[in-house]
Image (cartoon, rainbow, N blue to C red):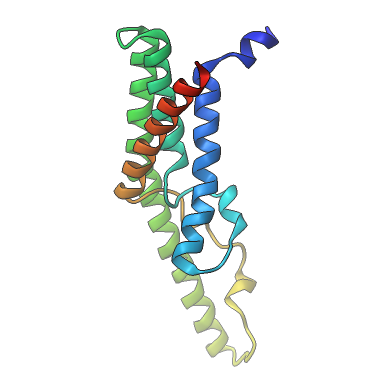
Length: 160
């Protein structure tokens, strides 16, 4: 059983794609901000979409390994479509709502501070901030999809 896990081409292709995409997020963030932020290794959102990279590489790996007409390819392709839709839809909008809620909390806390004449009242005293980067811009998903496809093709060539 362990041997079967170790030689599972679609599994290792998908895991490689998600790991490399997370590393690319760190590099991309450095290019944009000129500072290293290693938190991107474990963060959702950002460029490229690691979830999309994982599922697109999985679908291509299954297609290459089991055949483009296999049920496994159909299942992995539908899964990829759902993940990509979710990344640009539901998760992206949840992040936008978190941004608005965080701003409301900050504004309310500032108002309370002014009303109570508390000079060093901080909005952070109101509690934990919601995570604002959850989903992706369409270009991040598009890039993640093509990155995942490329990883699958390279892994197929290397896997032999």
